[in-house]
Amino acid sequence: MISYLEFILIISYMAITYHIIALKYRKSRGFPYFSRISRTFLVSLHAFIVITNILLYFWLISKDFNPISVILSAIGIILFAAGLYIIYWGSYSLRKAVFIPENKLVTTGAFARVRHPMYLGGIIGAFGLALFAGSVLGFIYSFILALILSHIADSEEKDLRARFGQEYVEYQKKVPKLFPRVW
Image 1 (cartoon, one colour):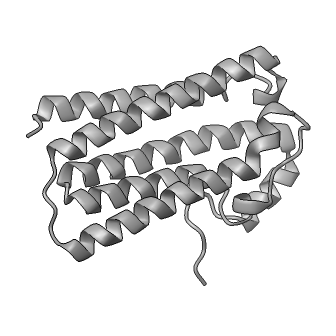
Image 2 (spheres, rainbow, N blue to C red):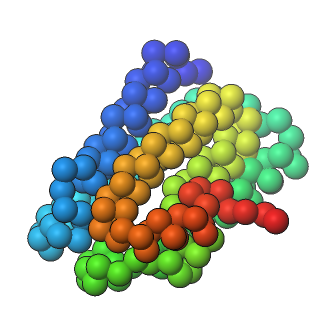
C-alpha cells in the first residue's frame, strides 16, 4: 500500500522534472539552434526524466494494484500497447528533426493526426496501465500527467510559433493539439 506522502512526492517529482523539459523552449532561439552536444545532452536529460517517471509510475501502480476484471485488465493492456505504438510512431516521424536541424516543420506521420503524438501516447499508456492495475492512484496520476503534458505542449508551441510563424499557426488550425478528431 502506498502512502499519501509517497504519492504526493511522486506527483511532485513528475511535475518538477517534466517542467525542466519545458525549459528548453523558453528564452532560447529554439532547440535546433543549440549545438549538437547541447541537443544530445537535452535529449539524454529528457530520456532520463521520462524513464525515471515511468519507473516511479510502475512502482506506484504495483503498490496500488487492485485489478477489477480480466476484461478491463485486457483493455488496459491494449491501451498501454496503443500508447507505446503512438510514442514510437511520433518518435519515428520526428527522428530527423532532432539531430539534423533542417528547420522544417514536421507535419507528416503521427504529426498529421495530432501536434503532440508522443504526449498523447504517454497519456493513453498511463491510463491503460491504471486500468490494467485497477489503480485509483494511477488514474489520478494519469490525469495530472495529461494536464502537465498539455501545459508543456503550450511551451513548445510558443517556441514553434516563433520559429515557424504563420506556417505553424496554419498547422495549429488544421491539426488538434493532443487528441485526434474522430469525425
